Length: 255
Image (cartoon, rainbow, N blue to C red; front, side):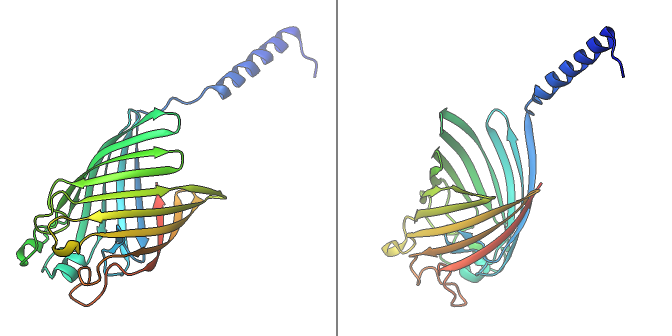
């Protein structure tokens, strides 16, 4: 096919326009809204079993604004209010959180926020020696490269413990990319709870988590967990030690 000068110019203009369009990035959305649902063989909060080492079904919704502001809600079934406290009601945990993330310099970021752990209808306060399980914490985190340090401080009574405002948790974690969708995350944390006899509520927890991203929102985790928690303090009414070492397997779908 013979091209005239006019058709050559038109073709060149079209190709140049196509190349320019290909190089133009889509504008960043003002915000994103994401959802997740998952299951785990053993729901642990800071190393302590929340479902008496039984499986849990969990789901959440997250909002993130390009300014750095974020908020979300997350929920899971639990057993500890009935099995540990001995209360008649309290089988659900609903976490509400919000905060702000920003960058200080290259590879150095921060995260400031507030989270409230709500246990709808819980009757922990009806049991002698305990108070309502609902808990609020403020937190601050710094991340440098693959390492994150975070400090959480309870502004209310902490997880049904009486006179426990001021409970604190410090944690240190790293996130190593192993390639092919695999990441490895070592973690260590220290929980302190004031006004507990002989500091029996204080303990250190540690974990090593291997995660695999399968793509299309599907991921899986295998975590080895342990604590040095006081067995007498963290044993439930059924004689089960909630801080014992365990292997937890999880599967999550995000969309």
